Image 1 (cartoon, rainbow, N blue to C red):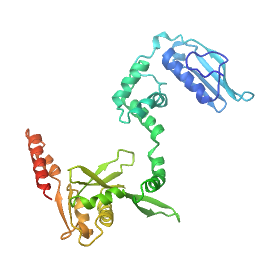
Image 2 (cartoon, helix red, strand yellow):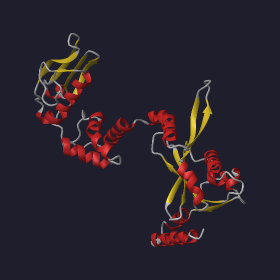
Image 3 (cartoon, one colour):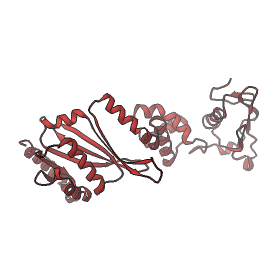
Length: 336
């Protein structure tokens, strides 16, 4: 059974139509450097011809048929090579699709999850000699990542199992869910999820009573947010406390997140805390709904970095002043 990529010939057989298509695609990109178009396509037949057959009279064509007695696809007609010399592709190749590019990117993306689009374009140029456009590189990189890590939808579906595994292998890990009702009985839609590891919960007892919170974008098609709470230990090292996945940074989501923090990190009436954050309206208003963070149990202060940056964007001394300001904050926090 023929499975090697390269030259094509009459009588070659392939274990599926996908393997036949991949071989023709590889041949057209690597060797012929010509484009083809699909003439016929059904579950048992796949026929292609030169993209420029009408304009140039090129007779290149290939037909593959499913042979039921062999359970294989076989090339039953093949006319080559291309005669359209004037139409050799030199920039992008129409048949060099995102799936083919993604296949060649898999190893590199596994090794470096931050593999950039500019690296994709350079890799394809070095490997095939074509300069693919930005949007094709982006789509191929997205496809490669989804094949390795799964889609956003599949990841969300695995979230309950993932959280169960966290709790099983990290005893004492806290996970809180908040669902929305739907019009289907017994079916709920995930809205928020909160988690905190037991060592972090226990470790907070020995840290200064200061919690910093912030939110960051999750760059997916659904634009969810990740809320994070951290503190500093006695060695001025960051200790992550808790995380939450929410739909947006709103009054409701921040209130829920602060309630979860209070439940698991500030359970006693006499617990005191200083909350540091940016000036997000939803967070500022949420403090009024969570007694643990509201005066007199809690005090709220704004992050100096968030206060300095907007006012210093046009200043040549912004970097120097900001760094001095942050050093000053560290000196003030040390005695706490």
